Length: 377
Image (cartoon, rainbow, N blue to C red; front, side):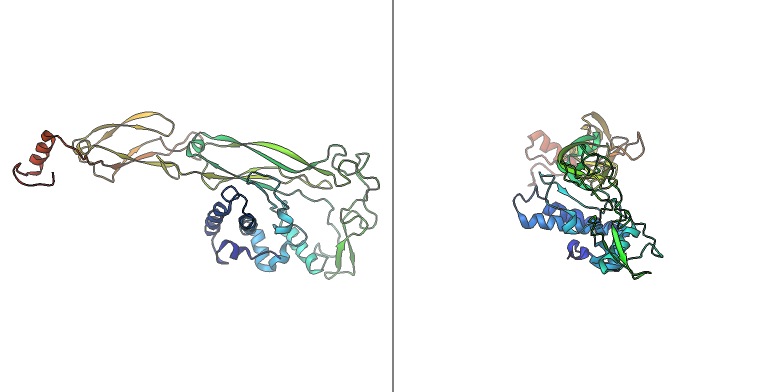
């Protein structure tokens, strides 16, 4: 039985999407296999966290879970731990993730009814269920530097997944042609007894729920229409991407069955904190120490931007510690093409620890302290 996704993420049932996302990112970073090599308990916890987030991030799946509980994902259409992960085909800390294969609310409820032993969800006993099955979605995560987020980059991921068998074109037959529809279920993959809403519906025993009867199986895939293969994907990460963003490559997940569509590939982006710059939306903040004489008298300082440009910035006389000087257009790329945020210089000051006699005298005169008087100098 699946664990309660709300309990796994540590959020209330009425938690907002932002709270759910925040809890997810905190836990997924804590239990990520890269941070816990060889720790089986952390790996299992990592799977539970992603399974829970898959349900709660999707309004339809969340609504289905709130109404039906674990039964909402009976039959493999949900993100159940048993059906969703199936080992670790990615390697290197990545993982296999079942996000429902594009199932809509109707599919979820249909499978929930089957889980209870009822059929007829299509209304009036019209057996419209197809034997086609969508491929599972795949998910990977990458941590990049802020500079990579500024310029954009490409992440290459290598993983093993099910792909369409080339020998039989995914049909599972020895001659590569589509197998005829199963005579018993009419190609639906299910048989039912009774009538009306409470008709019992079970996988067809003749075709094992596939909807097609294969007499001679493909020698390469043994009739499944899919084979396991190691793949490599180059994912382009656009400039200006934010921490927590998710990229989607449609149709790059696992191959479907019986003509079903392939799943999608998702890449979660994490941006590593930078030593020089703090990011706030499209703006950057850099804390720079400025001589107190420059702050008092005014002047110019030279700064370095995130793209390695050197700029002269004017410092007005009387600038206070903690003030921010704005440098327009030198932040992160914005969401609009060609737009950029701003760079803010947060003023700090470095108090000198060694002063010459001349410097001490000048400061004493400025402070109105007589030279023969004891002072903090």
